[in-house]
Image 1 (cartoon, rainbow, N blue to C red):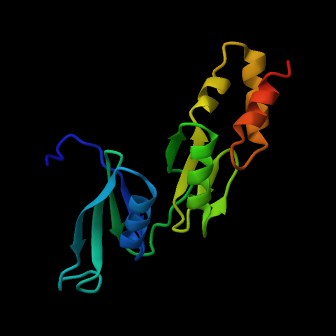
Image 2: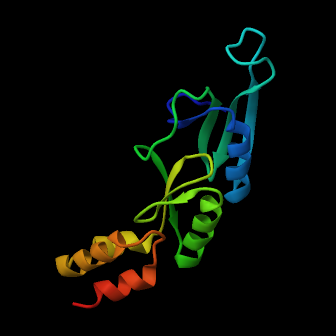
Length: 160
C-alpha cells in the first residue's frame, strides 16, 4: 500500500485513538482498521500504549494519534458526512451525537470532541438553487436548525 502523495487526516486524541477508530469503523460501512502502533520504551508516553491507529472509512484513510491532552479538537476542522436522504442523515446524526453535543446547521461534536457536519446531499442543491429567493429561504430555514430537516427546508424554499 503506497501512501506517497495521498492526503491523510491525522486526528489528535489524548488517550482515545483506538476507541474512536473502533467507533467510526463500526458506524460507517466499508470501513476497517488498517494498523495499530504502540509506544515503545523510549516514550514519551507509557510503553505499550496505543500510539496511532490507521483506519479507513469508505476508502478515506485516517490516522488517529494518542498525542496527549495538549491539542483538543475545535470546530475549525470538521468531517462532513453527505448523506443520501433524510433517513441516512438522521442515522448518522443520532449515532454521532450519542454522548456528544448538537451544534447548529447540521454540525455536531461526537463523544470524543471531533466536529462533524451531517446533512442530506439535497441540501446543497437547495442552497445553490438558481432562484436567489428560493436559495435564500432555504438558507434562512437551515440557519434555525440543529439537525437538518430536509422537508422543512424544502417547504421554506417553496414559500416564495
